[in-house]
Amino acid sequence: MNRSSIIHGAWFVVAAALSPACLKRDVAPETASGPAGAPVVVTIVTSERHQTLEGFGASIAWYLDRAADTTAPRFYQTLFPDLGIDILRFRNRYRRTEKNDRDLRQEVEIVRRATQALGHPPKIMLSSWSPPAELKANRAERCKSNDDCTLARDGNGFAYAQFGAYFRDSLGQYAALGIVPEYVSIQNEPDFIPPDWEGCRFDPTETARYPGYDRALAAVHDAVATLPAPPKLVGPEVIGVHHGKVADYVRPLDLHLVYAVAHHLYEKGDDNVWDWRSPGPDSFVEPMKEAAAAAGDKPVFQTEFQTDDDGGIDGGFETAWLIHHTLVEENAAAFLYWDLVWTAGHGLVSVEAGRYAPRDQYYSLRHFARFTDPGYVRVGATPNAPNVRASAYASPDGKRVTVVLLNTGERPADVRVEPGGFAVARTSTVRTTYRPGQSELWLDLGDVARGGTVPMPPRSVATVVLESAG
Image (tube, rainbow, N blue to C red; front, side, top):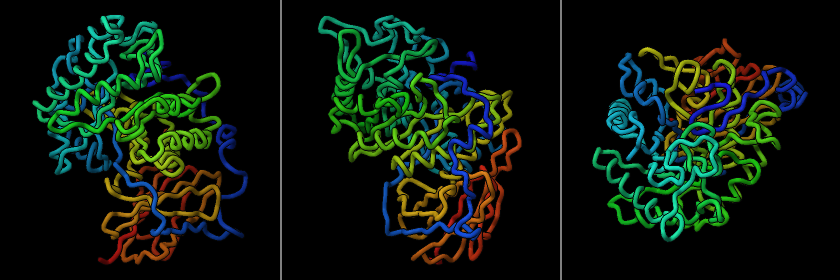
């Protein structure tokens, strides 16, 4: 794997080094404090209801052995309950030709150990990077920037029916092993032909060169509809929200066939360079709103994103910032990071020689995932200073409100959470301050928020949990 350009499942181009000049393009010059230096006040309005969360998650699509075989103490406790994720995204490995992909026992072991750690099975999302080689025009699962890395043709044109049958058979095989996916995506990044990993190109609708994603989705829907537990189809999982890609692929679809509209967060810029630093996370807001509009009344899932391009010591704060925008500006119901487990310096948790280390990005996701669950509803959370971002999530029973705060400014801020009509009996607060290579991770501030303020340095994230007496 060439780290300068390739991450499996995502197009990757090295971005410029982080600098104060880059950050200043995303933040206003004023301080992060409220009027006349007073604390920033974040007002919670529980009667203001937005999307219901499906959950947070991550992929284990490659390096499955590092998740299945690692026996270090508390490893699965760290991966699942401590992190708080609900959804595990697997790569469909049924009928693979590569030697390492012919045995699904690793998935079985991962699900078994995750279930043991959580006390219940995780939700499973099954995404396809490529159908089997015999269903590909190039007769190979791996792409090498070749235009024929797409679906094969039969006597009736593109092999949609065989594609649908493949998915039905693969779900049967997974079910026989005790894995029943709740969500299925028929193709990871159908708008992109990788330079050296698995892929299968689909255009939004059929052209002379490429099959239509809309017809492939319909074929899979029809093929799996009669299964005992048909999955919820999500898609199109395009590479990013920029350049109108989500709308392009959604427009021809019969949206009755999908449960949620899904996408990734990589592609941006006129030159198609993936760059989350300059001009930064705020530049994703308008494309996110356009993607949400394209989804209509369907839930939105963000199913793959990572920041990983500088030795693995940066990008944690930007990850949290983009999660915030995905939830608040796009009203997404789910956010999934790229690989949960990867090699040293990458993924949420780096694993080498049986030893593991959570990275900054682990804590970015944890701030949102640890104290929320599927069924929580995003409620109103309004700060009175532009450089403090806030979101809040109410539990279904009304007994907890989880508030996530970000200081995107260049100066410290003291933040007070005003709970509005929510009767607070107890609070707890944790904070992470992101400094490349020396972040202060998951600092327990205790009950500091009740009747007081949360001290937030620049580039910090805090989670405040408000609980009622009931």
